[in-house]
Length: 82
Image (cartoon, rainbow, N blue to C red; front, top):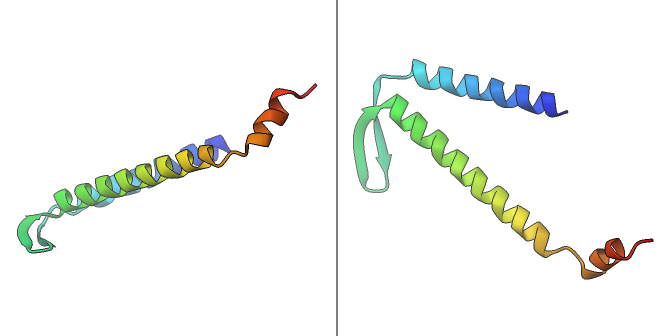
């Protein structure tokens, strides 16, 4: 299973790199009231980095939330098991 995850991560990373490298023409990027003509590669890298950061924050939040919801009796049961 670990090897399958690694292959999937490497495959998706390679696909992302190929998409970014092939899209270098300038595009009009707009965010709220800002607009600028930037190379598509910059826009794609920023979007990918933003998605990664958001995914990381969500994973950290859920991991922290999971630790806080561990029932006290489960801790005691595991501690005093004979």
